[in-house]
Each structure stands twice: as C-alpha cells, then as structure tokens.
Length: 351
Figure: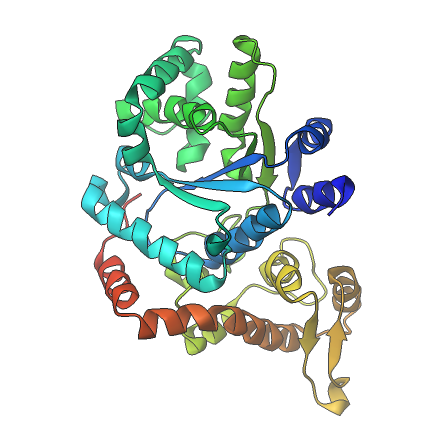
C-alpha cells in the first residue's frame, strides 16, 4: 500500500480520529507504528469484541502496524471482575486469545503481540510506577473521576480506591507500551484524551493518536452497547447456530427504520467488512435473491420497504453463523479450548 492507502485503511477503523494530520505524519515517518489495544478479561466474548477486534487488528497489520494487545488482568482485578479472582481472570484471558486465533486474527504474522499487564509491569516496575505516580500527581481527582466510563462506571458511582487509581494506570500503559496509536472503543476516549493532555503537560513532542472505534449495540431496543451480563441481548463467539438464529429473530429491527437498528449496525460493522457483500435469499414472489455490494445500497432498499426485516434477519443469521463456525469447531475439537470454555461458563460474571 502507498501512504494514502495505508491512511485510508487505518482511518476506516475509527468513528473518530484525533488527529488525522498527526496520523498521516506518523505513517510518513515511521515504517511500523505501534498500535495499542487492550481488554479486561471479564467473561465470555461477544461478537463486538471478537469479530470487530479481529477485523480492526487485521486492517492495522495489513497497513504495516505492530499491534500490542494489552491483557489487562490486574485492571480486571482492580475493577472487581470475576470477583477479583486473578486465577479466574487469567483463565478468561487465555480463552479470549483462543477465540481471536480461531476467528482469524493474523497472530501468526508476528505483528500481533499479547502482553499480560501483570507480567510486563512486574518486569519493568521501575519504569511503570514512577510514570503512574507522575500522571496521578499532575491531575485533580475530579479529572480522574471523569474517566470512570472506561471501567463501565459513571462519575456518580461509588468507586473503590482501586478504581480511582485505574485511569492513572491505563493512561500510563499508553506510554509504557510506547504506543503511537490508541485503538480502542469510543467508551475509552476519555482516558486517551487524558494521555494527550499528559503528553502536552510534559512537553512530549508526539502525542498518542486516538482512533476510537464504534460501539456495537445490544440486540434489544435502546441498548447502546452489547453487554456480557445480558446473555439474551448479546451474541457470543461460541453460540451455536440455533442460539444465533433465535437471538437475531427476536432482535429489535423495525421495518423501514435505519436509526438505532442493531441488525443494520451488525451489517455495517461486521458483515460488509468481513464479506464485502450481503446476500438475501427470497422466493420469487417476494422479490427473489439479491446481493448487496454496499451498506448504502442495502439501507436505501430497507428504508423504502423493498427489504423486509424477516428476510434481512434470516440472511444476517446465516452470515454470522458462517463467521462463527471456525470458532465453534475450535472449541469443539481442541481439548484445551474446550476446557477453557467450560471453566469460563462456570464463572459468575461480576460488574
């Protein structure tokens, strides 16, 4: 790819980019930028975390980036995930890695690195903790509390001391991993902005570029973010075909309505990026089979009533099942993966 092609592919990942001119400059001057992504091992993986992250990471790798995926085990413990049990958190982390590999994340390229926070911080504690302390020292408590969204909390929630410390640590991670690009969801935006403010405060020449991807909604009306805690509104990566079909059949999908329609969002952010097309199979009296080659073409057909929600849902279920089948096969046929899934399913998810 040339510079403009690389920029366009990377930029396509983000709903927002801070700042585009900095991203262009980075790509022009650094052959292999470092992209930071991260996750809390906190339960089963849904398609927003599994398929979307696979799509985004593969785009970054194809564009010449090195992707460091921060397995935030200590952070999950600070945030009381899995009841704060670090052993369970480690099992969940291993399970998540198995899913991404099975889903087709380009791990074998050598340009995707999984980094366990506990191991990396312990091995370079002399670098990490002074950085955390400096970030904490330079920010007021209200400023840190405004970052509570990154943990799934609000400013009004009663937080533990550990959870107040969490944003300072996540901000430090960006510099600790020497990240050029922060590639996280829109719900992580506030702490990434905090990192840019910190870079300005210490007069660091290059601020981390923020590339915030879209948050995929739940299946029910009004759910802005897919949640692990409501299994009926989330499609998990190892859900069987019948479960996917049942969940999509019950999904909120009003006729001719595009705004806040989760089924259309899955098409836009998962199906079209994965297959580059979407085929609806119908009887001749209902219009016959049709293959859409762009999301915009599909939206136009749906808004005018040419595409019925039932036909869309049937085709969406089929496409999702095709993506998820290799993951199901892996967890069925690989003994280690099967054991990990069994253990994760037995754990109680804590908020």
